[in-house]
Image 1 (cartoon, rainbow, N blue to C red):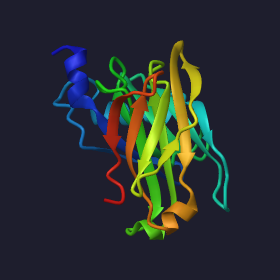
Image 2 (tube, rainbow, N blue to C red; image 1 turned 90 degrees about the vertical axis):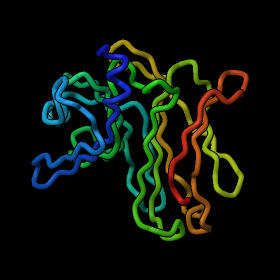
Image 3 (cartoon, helix red, strand yellow; image 1 turned 120 degrees about the vertical axis):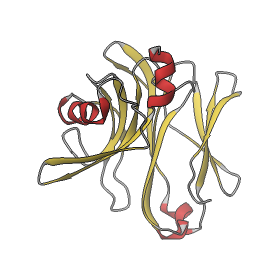
Length: 202
């Protein structure tokens, strides 16, 4: 099986939590099929491989600053994390095959939120993302029909250039029940070239 075909099977969602400095992670919905490093190899790489901050989510309304981090791993995956800092073991995000970090798409995004289950009860909702350079803009479609433009930053991680972003949704939107529903990638002419549903608020 080629690594490109393998990427379709090995797209993984990873939640990393720490207790007393000990890694207590879970690889969710992964399909390693006995090939490659397996879940244990990926978890070990996540524990030890360096991470690179590519964007920032500023502190706002009593909520602390967060960072957006990329972690190219020795296990053959590229991971995208939402975390309070580079050394935190409490990370939220996911990993894709290094040969196809966007998993055949134009968007590598992750939404995290605290509170709920109703949108109006959510205390904090954040979207992080990584896109290839051909993506000139990223918009989030909201449940009330409005859009939020993501602040893209061009970054380089180990010689590979990307655009990255991190965004915290306004509490006023959440209190009003307005949820982010879809993430849309745009080309330089403003045409849509990819979209992904968030699965939030629906």
